[in-house]
Image (spheres, rainbow, N blue to C red):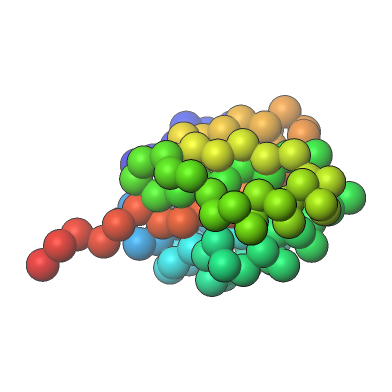
Length: 122
């Protein structure tokens, strides 16, 4: 899925997503990732709350992508996000990636923690 062109300033946009990968500012990233305006880093997934809570004070919103469809976050992660004072929205990954790009293009302080779309079954 290719995303349309926009002006992201110095921010790192998500160019496209596919089964098991993201293309971020032209670079291919396999697996889950956490991305904000200045960097994209590999991520373990929802058991790695520290990678998300480290964004506290640097972003106003974290968009959480749960894969091909929206699923509930683990209760412990919700508690840790609230304790860190982070506002968050949960959505399917494709929608989360588009929302992140849209907010980034608006100049908002946004981050995304994204699980990739599933790999094709063999």
